[in-house]
Image (cartoon, rainbow, N blue to C red; front, side, top):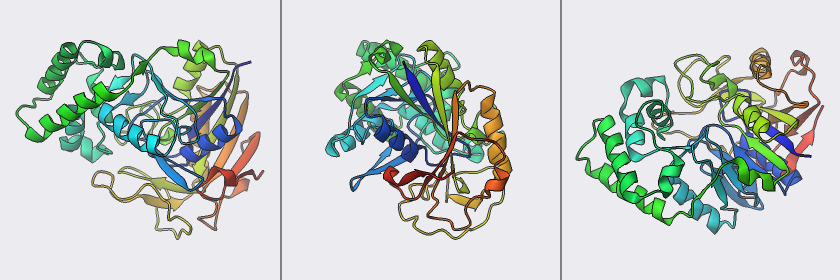
Length: 356
């Protein structure tokens, strides 16, 4: 029987979805990992046998040796994908990446738009072109993964139209980036395929992006992401694949974080230890990672939001970074019954254990 394990962030992102996915991969080495939202903005860190990799354009089972699949709900950036391919290859990870034909393609012009749009920067951006890509694809100037394996002159014509859409002309730096973008497209061994390829597997690990509190429909506007970060997309894919055995893993740090602008409860400069491997560091778009004590009521509210879409047979809670913050979690406030509560005590998934 087919079975799915779905990883969802309960916060504003950066909860530990990468390490949770890697833990599930260690238990299910025959699985394939499916990304069902977001794209190249992910920074899902996995540490394995003294190797470390930040998964963005590949799913978080790649370092351990599992293949990846990016659904039509995702974005891909060929230049960043190729760069990560080279990194993974050097680390002997699995570079097999299947991509749905309708996955949306981010171009250098979309990145330019994200990084130079004042309104977008105010609302919050990681500067990777995600929001611009999603918005552009709602209109006439679409670019899909299937276009990357078509005639080159057809692709170039589409790129010209996208540049015109943004009002871009004669930008030397952008021209260089477009040249590299096209070179990367030529070098990549594209595996553009529908869900039919997934019939070769029986176990599916669905890896979410960001967190429910950034969901485009349920977050606090305008500081949201351009994606459904609930289990909505994963459940739709499970239905298409006729998967009925679905187990959910809801992930939160034992404290609250937010990388970017917007509302955040209980924000304060809490004292952390053992956080030398923190991936979310300062950048010019999101600035410093913000911290605060865990708001258990908000965590449960995010869970209730996801239950609108979920038809899982099991619900688990995963609490990460338990070795970093001594105050931890008030379990008395977690009134919802979970099938199991897992704890993570280090950056490596081998330190996962059931704690309740």
